[in-house]
Length: 205
Image 1 (tube, rainbow, N blue to C red):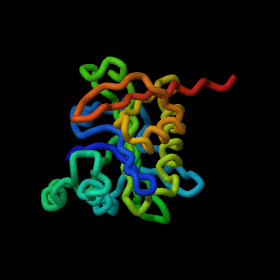
Image 2 (cartoon, rainbow, N blue to C red):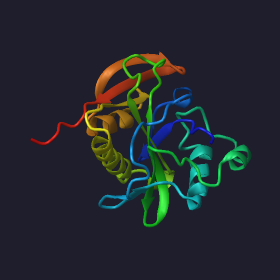
Image 3 (cartoon, rainbow, N blue to C red):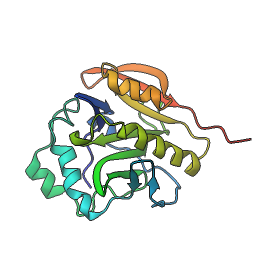
């Protein structure tokens, strides 16, 4: 299964990127969760496990120059089409985001390996990719919030981390909207990176 180069969404004409190609390599499975869950329905979206019909959309996420502006550039189409499995990204923590019956993006949760940055090691990492046609309508915030709610139920008491470039203002705003606060900044992959963490939801009393 080929790795996604990074996780990103776009708001308006500004690409929102969370994570990088180097960071994704070696990410670990999420952990003991029931998978696949029942589809998650929000006001406008359905979040579900991937299906074979989503393959073209996954390819477009990887080859789109717009999606990959901050992610090292698009992947070659011929190689991506050749290597993409019939049913892409079918593992716990990978949610297809569907609007009106069609895939518009992906929300990801993977666990950060212990040999990565100490502040994130072993924690779940949130990422996201959305096709350009879905930018600017709040779908990323809606989908990510729903996935975080699912995570709170599936693995209660666990924090979630998120990486983005610190010069990506739109991504920083989305992180804040989702409840992530700054842990640290560091230089990697030719730019300053931002690490935020969302504290686990407190159980109702």
